[in-house]
Length: 359
Length: 227
Picture 1 (cartoon, each protein chain N blue to C red):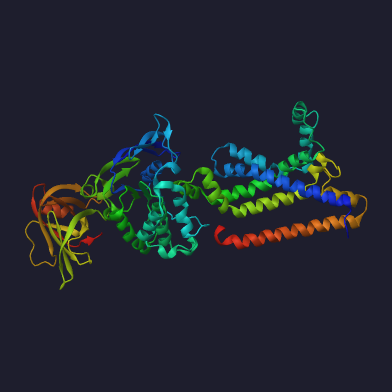
Picture 2 (cartoon, rainbow over the protein chains, first blue to last red; picture 1 turned 120 degrees about the vertical axis):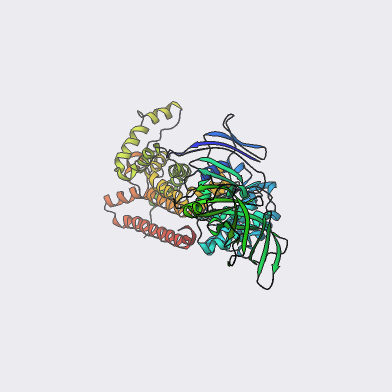
């Protein structure tokens, strides 16, 4: 459990003021636009920045308490940190970079911790290289392994993909998926990319102008219309927890079962019975009052309109539809909403044009 | 062309002075340069200017004030006398003090720029990898600032060897104690003993050139990662 009550005013006048509890397991994403205070908060947790007021307790250990003038410096905190730029030490080889923290971490880190990190990030063949002989993606993988090698009790990641181009991001994301599934320590992950939230988060804290405006489990948070940073993005939508229930060899399709029904997707090779996250974007969901027939759209789910809200553009509205208790989000024009006389409680058919298995 | 015993003595004093000054400045200048590179305090502006002062002042001005300070009537001179210590004027250690002051910018400025080039991020990374600030300084900042150290050490040593005005004001011309190369050359030239002046001046010229070539060679070899 991470208890963070932090208040800090930066020189430019920006003020961070949060009071949060983050779970002891899983990936907590600090999400928000740039300037919302997410990196400042992460730096306070790391101890690289001393919040002017506040109290920070991680796993029962007090790292900062201004009431008693307690402040544990960063090098005595059991953290691993990954920065936006890979920040490898240029004068050391990959192995030297990995050993740097291992040598200093004492009991928490062993050779086995390091070997596991090397294996997890797939950097076994790079150990003898120097950082300037690595690609951007390789460097960031080494930086992540280096942070894990110290055996941290808390992993902090500050937009680890933001400095990479799209291809490099795709190269790293599978490793982050593994991290999300396999790590037992809590992770605090900072990002402004909603795609990374959908893929990696277990828990989301939405920050805006230095304050936490909403927080909760990923699946609930995405289905909220009152968090502009999440719902007013072009990539707004929900993520469903699904089980791969059937794989159709002939059409190369897979049936994904979720609590409210089933969705057919392209077969992504996930094994039968495995748990996957399926992303359904609001722009890919349209609504009809009667069951649509003679349509190419295979995924049609019956549900009830739960609420409607304004979208960024005045021509659009967002609708939440409950399908067997699971919420889907639909983006439609205000004209269509009026023509169908959509209102909470109304029965509708949700047509899902596209779904993406994210992890 | 052979050097007289007195000239060899001057060479010895010069090397001892330059080595001592460089060592003292390395120990004083490194923390000062680190502070200047990292602080956001307004005081740094003043300190930076003070450090640069020997670059623009005539050495005789610097030497004159040091002489006043160290002399029997000066604050430092009187303090030493009160402690029953020998006076610093016209002594080897007085020369060391004078050289430390006049060579200060040659040590501090290259180090300050090199430390600034290392960037805050690298020491932050070291801190998140369990390195204490001192540990991070020696295991990350110093190796990354290696070129700066090479320049600073070479320039400080060379500048101390070449110092004339300050030395003459504070140290005088005492063989074996304060008579350094630059003054020996001046004396030879004054006495129209050109062969002796040539021997010393030529030797100094060659040694300085060789040192700079060596420095550039080392820098080029290292530039792979520290550029």
